Image 1: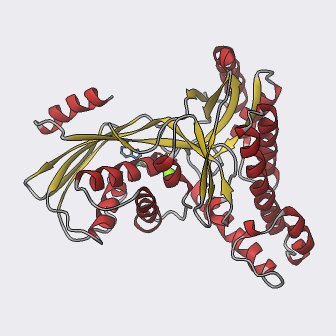
Image 2: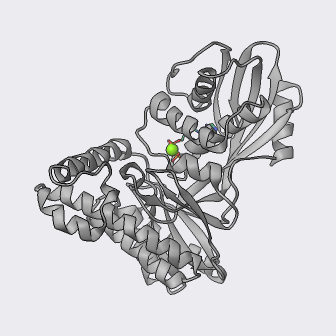
Image 3: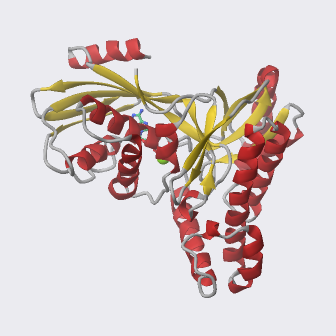
Length: 383
Ligand code: ADP
Ligand code: MG
């Protein structure tokens, strides 16, 4: 990809890039809708990702181009920026804005991006483009940012510049990911543990439902508010700052404080899902794939029935997986309402699985899904 991108860079800008960087996408293995509730998540970086080739220029201009989008931008170097329309380049522009809060940027840049993460499918192409930009600029300019600072900066871009109320998991996973390992991340304290993720004769399979975007964003914000309502109700008796501070046993003692049935379902999902993450991380690190798979199905069921963020498309995939002998576990991943599901599948069954699932899905949903087999890869890096 590096040479291909260098050629395109030369075609586009008429000179060679000086450096090239990569940041992956991610999947969350288990622990969904937990990151904004201060609990544990269990993501890993995948081998699909975003590449950025760059060179400085003497025009005090930032040129944003991507092989994935026709839209381009040329923006003069200023001391701060605000969001400019809805173009893709707002993600990297937000990163420039963050860096400018602490440092002067002495030169303009010619930037060329390319990516192979399916965009808008819940595999975090947005975190990937944010972190690759933050990583690239700070590395190139030799600015003093550690990986965690890059994560926090990229999250601020997503929250404050782009305006999406998401947690820290995505940026963390794509920055800190390691090959064949997954990350147990406490989204409250940011303590994390890297654990072995040896899938043996199985592979991580990602199924993109290709469901067109609908209400996902507003529903996401609605769930965030519902969790805040649950927290407020519980806080009349217990003093907690996050739902995930309660174990399922403790929650059972206080759940009567939540009188709204819907809010109670949301909180029940969050608190039990948080516990499932610890169990799943332990099972996976001990190579107990069956146990891990059972927890994946339990997670999906809870997201479907209690959190109500699944839907026909994701359920069709997971139902198929549950009946397919060579799948050990499957669940929706990401915020839901479409996007992707993941399955732990026997290596030698990939072809048969893909063929049968594609036909089954087409028949029930009316259009095709896509299946990718991904390795667990490294986080942000210079290449
Ligand atoms: P997701 O993070 O689930 O893929 P988002 O809607 O959060 O979906 O982010 C997708 C957006 O990120 C794209 O619409 C685009 O603005 C930006 N983006 C991601 N990858 C690239 C890329 N390779 N080139 C340009 N923009 C990108
Ligand atoms: Mg995103």
